[in-house]
Image (cartoon, rainbow, N blue to C red; front, top):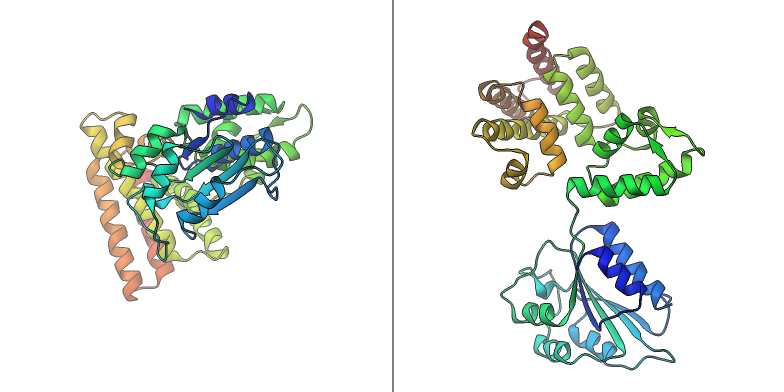
Length: 344
């Protein structure tokens, strides 16, 4: 069941006794969490609400709660966080559990208890008996990250609902700076909503001033400037990062990962892979793949291999102290940009 279907059923009070909220998208998790609490009119300090972290407390404590009748109310709401036993992982110092007792409860849950398991994972271990039983008994709510086009549609609809207007380049920049992540985008959109005046169009400049850039995004920009032969702009951005306290060795390491991504994308492009297939192969977010494809198609594989090898060699020289680390990086930028300036 997707989130919209789940929210609709919760709002209509068509409630099951068992739920499994599966996925890693925090914004969607929070929507479902708030819907349960609001619909049942339960405060988090309510006697009919309980929350357990199953990576710290045993299942027996949970069962003691879910098997109790509600206190002057129709339902008891219980949230079970981090049910690690549904996966192949076991956290350090996690309790030992009687899962057979939990299975027996899942087979015959108390009608006045709404038990919600929250599993912040991409998938479960489908081979386990407890997993099979829970999937059979519970309503599974999917809160996995949305695809790029779904995030775009969701944000555009939300922007319309907020009464905001973005210029096209402002929205594209906003989408990039929030990594096409719904959770991150909704958090930053709230800041823009508070900043904007009624009827004001959100420009690229407003987005740049309000939405912070991560180090990876700054290095992405640096990479773009280097590959466009813009040595002066690349060195200026490098100096800005240094002033902000970023280490050359860290900047170089991220630059290596950026060039490696371009190399992987270019190789796959050469054998006919399209954006979706490339993303599935190297497990990178589709929006990053899209940007990488735009950059990679300007270069041959051999050119990218040469850049990658030079960066690896520079990394070794920096770590072994063979040359001044800032000088090494500056020379790399100048050397790389020179032929690109001539060809542009």
